[in-house]
Amino acid sequence: MINLEKFTSLDIILASKSPRRQALLKEMGLTFRVAIKDVDESYPTDLEPGEVAEYIACKKANAFELTTEEELIIAADTIVCVENRILGKPKDEQDAFQMICSLSGRSHEVITGVALASVNDFRVFHEKTTVYFHSLSEDEIWYYIHQYKPFDKAGAYGIQEWIGAVGIDRIAGSYNNVVGLPTDKLYREIVQMLPL
Image 1: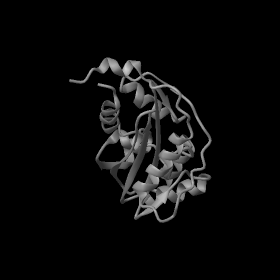
Image 2: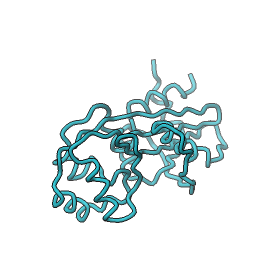
Image 3: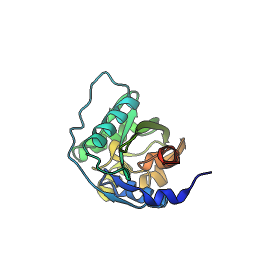
Image 4: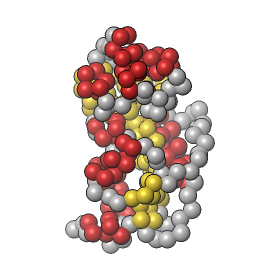
C-alpha cells in the first residue's frame, strides 16, 4: 500500500524552467520549487537518441549538491528525433520552418529522459512517444511560427498549442511525455524511492 502522504514530506526540486513541466508536476499533486543550474548540454555523438536524453538529464541532476534526505531532484531533457536525426531547439524562424517541414506528413519520436536524484538513490529512465503529423502547408507552418514563436521547444513545436490541435493525426504512447514529462512513469519511479 502506497502512503501518498510521504510525497508531502519530500523537498522536490525541479531542475527546469519549463512552464509545461511545472504544470505537469502540479497536475500530479506535487509541491516543488524550481532551481536552475547552467549545464553544458553537449553529448557524445555515438549515443542512441534515448541515451542522449538520459545523458543530458543526468548532467542536469548532477549539477546539484544534495544536503538532506528529504531532497529529491527531478531533471529532464526532451528531444525530437526524425529518422534517427535529433532536432534541438530552433535558432531562428528559418530553422524552425525547416524543422517543422521535416516533421510534416510523417511520424517522429519524442523522447524524454528523466533523472531522479536523492541522497540515497539515483534513477534515470526515458520514455518514447511516436507522433504522426498531417501534411502541413507552408502557410500553416509560418502561421504557427509567427503566432507561437516555438523557439524554446525541441523540434520547434508544442503539442499543446495550435499545431497540436490541427496538425497531429495521432500519437502512440504518452501524451504528457510529448508535453515534457512522462508523468505516469515518473510517479511510479518516485514511489519506489520513497522510504517504507
